[in-house]
Length: 184
Image (tube, rainbow, N blue to C red; front, top):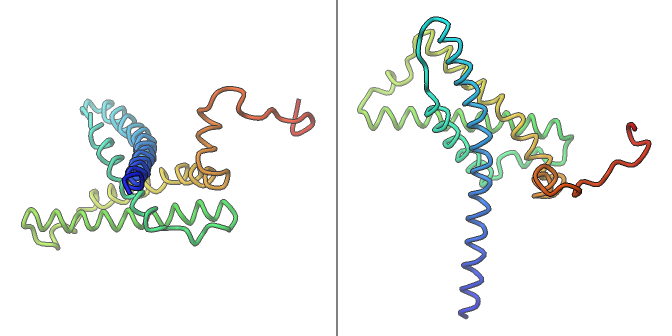
């Protein structure tokens, strides 16, 4: 009985570590994306002598979105697209997870209104500029998901872990191309 408990603990520990690695990989990818946007925004505003150093926003956004994506994967969001052409799987998952992220953002506003004792209508009333910025941010978040799901889908199709092995494994692990298969 003791060995079963030990085996169960090891399996649980392995799953926690694997899930944390997946979370960290998604969060790092998203942080580089949002960090790039922050840098671009900082450079544009600097032309007008306006200081802007909101890298914390990019980090928090990346951490939250990574968790939302993993929650969506736990609920098998987008599984129904698998088995189709890869482009449709990637686009389908991107749009579906984009809607899922939007739903989480709406829930975030509802919770914020409840916690801060604000009227719900006030929480969802935006000026034209605020609405435009919100729309642009959602659009950027969806665009960020495209390469993320392309890599995730390639990894799924190749076999979990193969993509990381090809990208980050030791040299010589990638089989050489055969002569005549696309060049010299």
